Amino acid sequence: MTHPQHPDRIGGPGDGAAAERPPLPNPLNIARWLWIAAAVLGLVRAYVRLSDRRALATELRAALPDLSQTQIDEQINALIMFNLLYLLAVLALYVSLSLRMTQGKNWARVVLTVFAGFGAFGTLGTLLLMSSIGRAELLRITQVRVETTDVVFGVLVTAVELVALVLMYLPETNRYFQATRRPRAPQQWAPPPPGPFLR
Image (cartoon, rainbow, N blue to C red; front, side, top):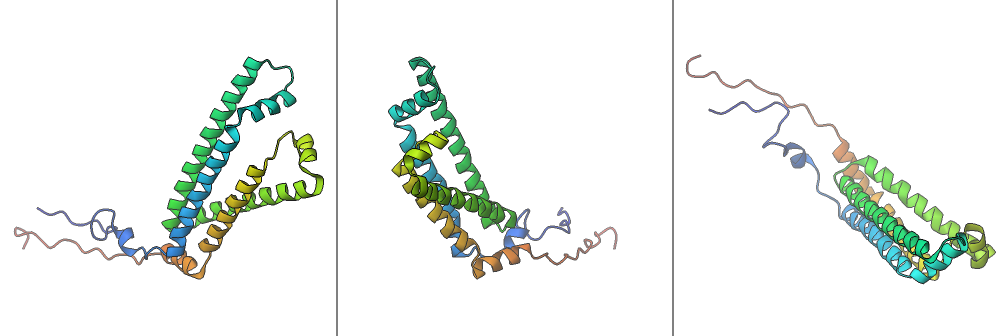
């Protein structure tokens, strides 16, 4: 005995939306991988910075001179663990948002746009401060040492995110978001034919 199909379903279970979704534009697919690449670059940047325990110990001694060596080692271990967990969470967030974006969720595109704006603002601000007051004065004010590798990775990540940002707003990409946002026509549901005992 076959059951009547639910009026909201088209085809098999759960494949109605997939059947009507337009093909994914290539620029949007590239943008997804660029966002993931930007998060991976952030992980590499953190690994390079946190692998220099001597520099971390020097910064901690300057900020907290009363700590013993054991306490400094504990602080460094906690700092490394916190930063790695944070960056792994950021990577997971970027993967999730980029996936939602390729599914036509405009809110995910907006969130990624905000992330790109904050990243570009932070990198530009760091470059301007370094060029105007110098690295030593910036260290004295912020108590944070800015290495050349930090600047290089920051500029590289910002460039990747800006390219992804441009790809997310190309005309072809905008048409994809508009098509996935377009409401579907209501499906007419007809009752099943009468059984042999009702004819």
